[in-house]
Length: 287
Image 1 (tube, rainbow, N blue to C red):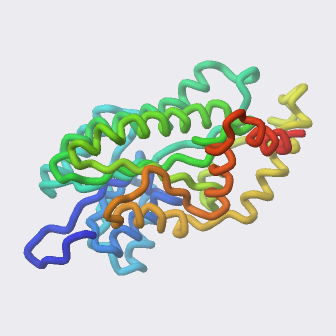
Image 2 (cartoon, rainbow, N blue to C red; image 1 turned 120 degrees about the vertical axis):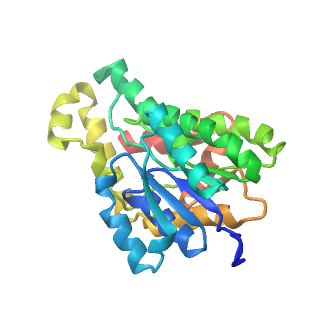
């Protein structure tokens, strides 16, 4: 828990991707629990929604907006250095920034796939690398928002799931080493969340269906299934509650799902030694 001493500075958490959705909700929720939230985003002109939410929650003084582009090493280094210079400490990082993607490898370029990896995987690596020395000094927390798509591969999401799988493997590998220096590593795995994330994929559905060729029937079925899943999506605040739980827990788990539905979905894969149970689920999305 953040310190409540009047003589001590509050603990500082740096959160990426806070202009909307889970990141915005996490910044506000962490501030409500007493953290000083450094809420970062690539374009700070999009901070109005966050500032409004923080003001309404009565925590505007504990939410600090800063620019950070996870795909730009200089931007990452400058932001982390500024936090240390001004606050003297970094107690937790929440890697939340990411971008959705819809497509299949036969119908997109390798450059498209690289771009997905750049923001969803290498951006996490860049922030983690810059933050670790400071988290080691504070014996802090490294929390990364992945997805159930980081555990279960999903049709028309090859590039996105590949990036999230990579993040899961990266953090699972880092966790025991980080623990030897007092840093805890946690992966937070949301399922469907009602946010701007899906809208930001920017897919022209009629055009995508027209261009899908032999995959058009499968894409239509997948889109119908996905629309139903997001109709029952949890709120960003509900997902953020799992992140704040990871911030306050004495010994947070390596993996935390943000809902019972996400937990059940991930469990299908983690106990599925030959892959048949997983494919039984995902085949039904496109068939």
